[in-house]
Image (cartoon, rainbow, N blue to C red):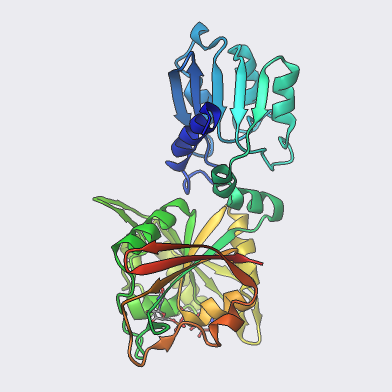
Amino acid sequence: MNEDHKLLLEALDLASQRKGYTSPNPAVGAIVIKEGKVLGRGFHWGTGSPHAEVEALKNLGNEATGATLYVTLEPCCHFGKTPPCTDLLKSKKLERVVYGFIDPNPIVAGKGGEILTQSGIKAKYLPLSEIENFYQNYAWWTKTRKTWLTGKLAVSKDGNVCSSNGSPVKITGELANELTHFRRNQADVIVTSVATLKADDPRLDVRCGSNVIRKPVWVLDKQLSFSMECQLMKTALSITLVHGKSASGVKKEKLKSVGIECVEISEVDSELLLSELAVRLGERGYHEAWCEFGPRLFSAFTKNRLFNELILYQSTQVEICNGRRAFEEERGWVLDDYRIASEERLGADVKESWVLK
Ligand SMILES: NC(=O)c1ccc[n+]([C@@H]2O[C@H](COP(=O)([O-])OP(=O)(O)OC[C@H]3O[C@@H](n4cnc5c(N)ncnc54)[C@H](OP(=O)(O)O)[C@@H]3O)[C@@H](O)[C@H]2O)c1
């Protein structure tokens, strides 16, 4: 790994600290280096806050002259909520700027790099797969205005997801659980169903050591049968119920009065039109939604190619006698439109990452 590669990955670590908290802006990290010494580090805190480049350079005067900036995303060149970063980099007389992703936002899209080159700064685009993965949901949202949907399902050794009476069963081990909390943390929003809330009463927050972080949670709930007695009332940052036209107006008013938002989507054949979900989430500027629900919705999403990515935890130990099958149909058929992108052993579980073909 050469020095540029290593330093861009360090900038990526900084960006990772805010992934899941900056939307509609992307999470960005930056490091300023001169003669092998780190002069500054920064990341973008969130919309309306200074960009990562500004944070990394904020305490630097003349010493920044001739330095190199490593930044995960191409510097912006337009006036948004903050002035163009390219102006700042010029005024600081940097010698080089190395960036890991061309901003897909059409008002930047290569122009940031060009402006730097024209002003005599050596601008280098260094593509890295880690950074490409990091920004895939931002790039998807920028292109389609839809939120990237990641589905998670834990499957027992004998192919079940829960007991036949719906009572929860612990399928995954500690390592898989840690990964789930990491992915919840990096997602902008969590999606579940009212059926899963009724069966499991999950918290759906992020627990990392002693830290507990609450995230916005959207619940698919066609008839607004949500119960205000559930744990989510305390553990979610906000609750949004996604319902159909047939939901009662009285219930809606009651829910609204306690701060629960209701969003209506279309119904087709008495089912919610699930393809509208990513559009509604996208309108809020969310780049990624982490979806945790049961086999009915999971199958409906995969059949309709609605997940961009699937995480399946396959247990090699836990069995659920007479449980409910993970997939309504045979797994191969339901996942016909997906392929395994990677497989990783996590203790007694195997994590499979599936992506659309
Ligand atoms: N192993 C795991 O990783 C995991 C994760 C989460 C949950 N679970 C388990 O899964 C079980 C719940 O699974 P489930 O299959 O009963 O429920 P689900 O898949 O979580 O949700 C199904 C519900 O979603 C609603 N829905 C809205 N639009 C839909 C559509 N277009 N197609 C299908 N459903 C739609 C339906 O409500 P309406 O009937 O009102 O239309 C339906 O009751 C629980 O026992 C829980 O423990 C397991």
